Amino acid sequence: MVFVLVALVVLALLASVHRYVWRRFVGDTTAPGSTLRRVGTVAAFVLPLLSLGAMTSGRIGAPFWLQQVLAWPGFLWLACLLYLTLALLVGEAVRPFLGRVLARRDAAAAARTTAGTGTSVPAAEGTVAATANGTRPRTEELVPAGPPRPATPADRTPATAPPAEPEAEAEAEAVRDAEGAVQAETEAKTAAAAPGIAHPSRRLFVSRVVGGAAAAAGLATVGYGTHNVLSGPSVKRVTVPLAKLPRAAHGFRIAVVSDIHIGPILGRAHTRRIVDTINSTSPDLVAVVGDLVDGSVADLGSAAEPLAGLRARHGSFFVTGNHEYFSGAEQWVNHVRELGLIPLENARVELGGFDLAGVNDIAGETEGQGPDFVRALGDRDRSRAAVLLAHQPVVIHDAVEHGVDLQLSGHTHGGQLWPGNYLAELANPTVAGLERYGDTQLFVSRGAGAWGPPVRVGAPADITVVQLASRQA
Image (cartoon, rainbow, N blue to C red; front, top):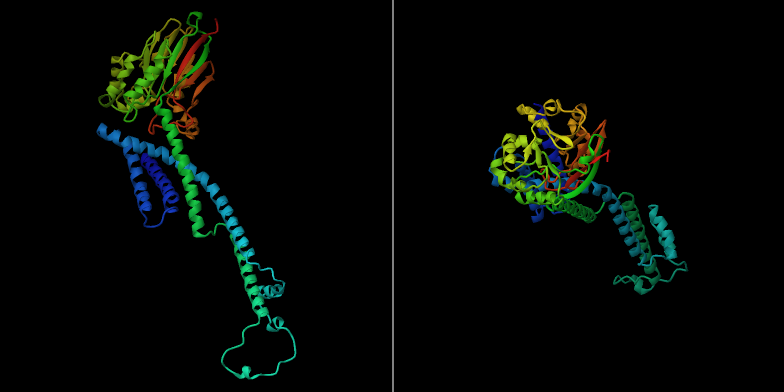
């Protein structure tokens, strides 16, 4: 019941966001019945359906080719929706300012046009004042005084009226110009005081400018983030001193890689880039700390095969992540063993200078295969340094309890899509980097791949070479 309510809330939120994006990008910028509006309206329905298909096709067992067809447009649209919405929200703050600037510009243009008609006639000042007061100017004020003129035969002829005197025509024209100036000034003041009541063409212009800028910013951000993923992870290096590490093990290098997420989007070429990058660092040991795949061995086994090319003096080790349990963890454990990796399923190996242990992911608890710290660490010699591979950082407190010196984790992706790092902070003790918890240090990798949208913004993909340092050296 709770799941259904959460699903309904999420769907309602997505519908509201899509409605908002449609209104700002399509409804406010296109004419009713136009081709652009029809295309935009169709896209507003098709794109979220593609996203829904991309998120659910793997879970319902759809053919892998269909998963691949849906994945690129469906997942990319989710990233576009996020950054287009954020850009539009910034645009909401700019919109009234731009409207006010345009209103003042139009008012200034109207004032210049009025000034160009030459309305500064002194004789019309009284007339303008009278007009503004709602009274009509008196005719005798405009006619020169003088003795009455004797009637002539022309006065009694009904043919045509005598032409108006030039002075009267000029004064009447001045009155009309002055009245127009007063009206223009009143309209300009009204527009400046209430910019929200804008002319339709002004509203359209503002909507198109803000919408165009938001589209450019949002799509450019997604393009940059996609390049970050497809270009492969960068190499980071961090030195971690361990009090119990013997001098002989000083400088031991562990290449830590997590969250590779081989799947419908990131396939064999992605795996090959990661293997080549790891091998270029010449590590002493490789640690693959979970979320290797998003799919079954049948669909993705060949895409994972480049992992057989990993080279390290003390071997390559693997622990499960939560996504392995969505995809068939037991099958993947067997497959990576065939590729030459050593799975640590709640197990430990003793190396020359320290103990290396690994625990299953928390997601395995649903299958009775969750983390077992007692089995992995319970009977070890605590005078030796211990390094633990655990996919999720949240098990750090168990690691502290069992005397672990260093825990290597992933899972968070560093937030992957800003501002997702703030949400990741709510669920994880450490989102990325090295932190200390009591006598235990925790290092969290941002990961080498991406889940969902193949996009990273503010959290670049990385492979980290952790160099252990002995305080006895």
